[in-house]
Length: 201
Ligand SMILES: Nc1nc2c(ncn2[C@@H]2O[C@H](COP(=O)(O)OP(=O)(O)OP(=O)(O)O)[C@@H](O)[C@H]2O)c(=O)[nH]1
Ligand SMILES: [Mg+2]
Image (cartoon, rainbow, N blue to C red; front, side, top):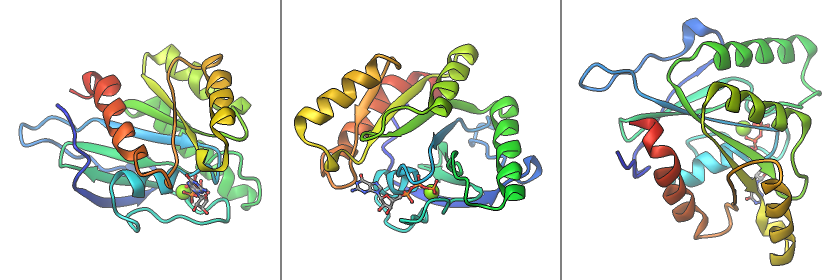
């Protein structure tokens, strides 16, 4: 089922399991989900807006910690996309950070419709301990993970190649991405369709 990423609708901003949406296809099957994860400020919400061609569907900010809840989007009536709060954001009140991390842990351990993970890593920084942990976890659960190296507009072509090489020493699949590169969206949709589509059927 090749998803064109043409039509998107914001569903709900949630934290606790009771708030997570249950969305079914006309045939009564639960819709599959793709979760976006990564360090705070890496560009998760911006990628969603770029992918869904709607500048405002997800809220972005230059200040880290903008996304403080799990935001669920319905895409083409066939798939849910989830923008998770960024990890590694220490400036929020301790209680809030604890609440997010507990909710995210619960999400990863209990959400049966989670079929794919897009792990975003800043192309200038490389993977953090948390990024490596997510990757190990996805391997152990057999959930496909695609690494997206963001903000490549800030790097030269040579630096992008180096960042890709470094990423490939840790992860199976990595692609460069920038919201300022007109071709990034087409390439991202193509790779999601090719690599992840079989898991979403
Ligand atoms: N130059 C450049 N800036 C980007 C790109 N993607 C995102 N940004 C900027 O990076 C900042 C953070 O982007 P967000 O999309 O809000 O990041 P986030 O990962 O959702 O952050 P949290 O919600 O805090 O977890 C914003 O100022 C964006 O405009 C990119 O490809 N290139
Ligand atoms: Mg965000």
